[in-house]
Length: 214
Image (cartoon, rainbow, N blue to C red; front, side, top):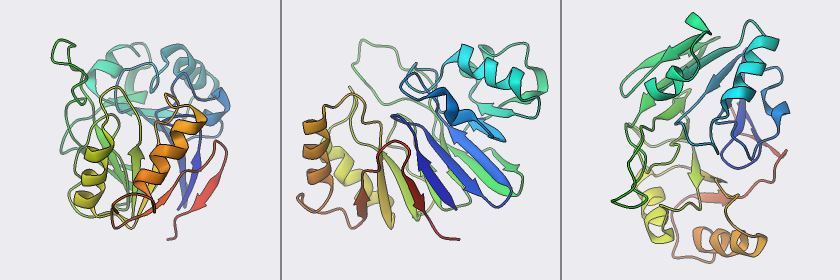
């Protein structure tokens, strides 16, 4: 399994015959979708989902499939069976890569700001993308994609979240709201300069690839 980091919350996962892109939002270059078999969307916020860009990708590639929650799928009317609505407890297969769905709601930004639906995706039982929530996968995972900064995120909670998930590695995503200095500070606290999470921590740059093993 190979991971390519794109802007912000977006990654591309390649495993055997499957190429899957997760959360190609406004901070992600459009070429993140090139050659993808499938797109997974955790929720409707613009930094994770851009309707026009996804429609253009679908028009360019009739084989592209999309899995998302009901709110996102509702904005993609006209694509028919190519869009599948999924939620907590669902599972499906992308060219031999097993995917399961976990979680229901976006993390609370403020009590007066309405919450939107949010789902996390577990790929191959090994890699978990929680979207914008601290959802627990059903078991410890090899790789956790960790949203390191957001209006709802607090570093102490992220540390405890990693400890609870117990991944072998945590890979930083959702960093676009931080300055370069802020990314260094957060990386230090979540890595060797912090109290410790029990996981190897990395902050790949956009375009960087990680080999996650078989």
